[in-house]
Length: 270
Image (cartoon, rainbow, N blue to C red; front, side):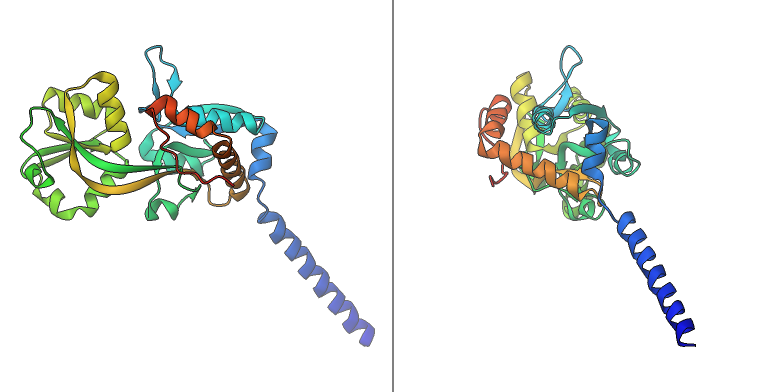
């Protein structure tokens, strides 16, 4: 009888070990190995978001984030594949495995942090209002009764949702597919103001000698980060470590100076 009980106990222990092993296997993070095995990092981006990622006059994808990502991939000894996506579907693209990360002026928010695994912030930003230079609008209060445009799926949408009093005062809010289209809409007079990332606004106005100005007041203070799948901690940590090394040796500052004439990065060196 004792032998029988010992056999039962041994069987239960073996079953427990098998189940434990299966759980450990299922929970294993192979994200970095998977990227190394395929030899590339697929970067999901909005290809109309200058200066972070956009198409130049020769239709080549360029930008600050692209330059940084290329250097990260090079140091990881893999290729970088640029994958333009519908920005309103960025989390779905990530979850489905079509891309390995969301990296293109991607604002860190509490809502997004519930869905993605963010890197540490690498740049500060604000949501600001852009108007035509001849506009009478000087403050946020002056926007009452006017028409506002912004990019669909952007953090500008979230910023406006939180500014309930301002939103309620507007005559209309128009969501367009990208910021370049939104600038053209503003320039044509179809809308009265544009809510947009300050970094993007300043770059667009300077580069295009555009007849716009930015209001002093802002709607939100933000930070940019890189979004990975929730379970892809190993990949996230490797990219983070590489960014910190680039900060330490001055590479991030060089890339920032190329695009902004100043170092705007906030990554802390190790």
